[in-house]
Amino acid sequence: MLTFNRGERVRLTGSEEDKIYVIKDMKKIRKGGVLYLLKSLEEDSVSRLYYEDRQSLLEWMS
Image 1 (cartoon, rainbow, N blue to C red):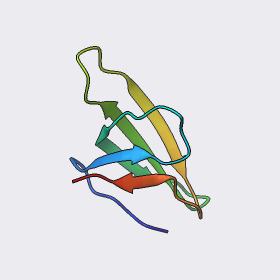
Image 2 (cartoon, rainbow, N blue to C red):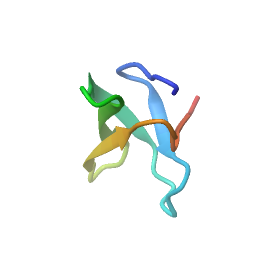
Image 3 (cartoon, helix red, strand yellow):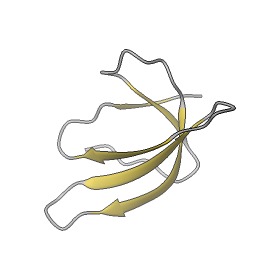
Image 4 (cartoon, helix red, strand yellow):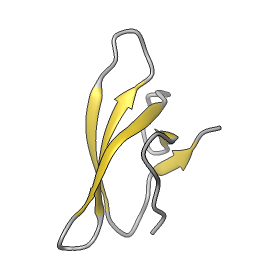
């Protein structure tokens, strides 16, 4: 499982949307996995919770 850091830019690979998000916060879950709080980089920004366990759909953006 890949782990990301706060402030990194990522995008969801399985999504039809092509939005880029910044990781605002993250928390390890007791069952195993990580819960991320993502915020989009748009004027009308959207916050999104994303849970990641063994398979990651997050991809680093430069």
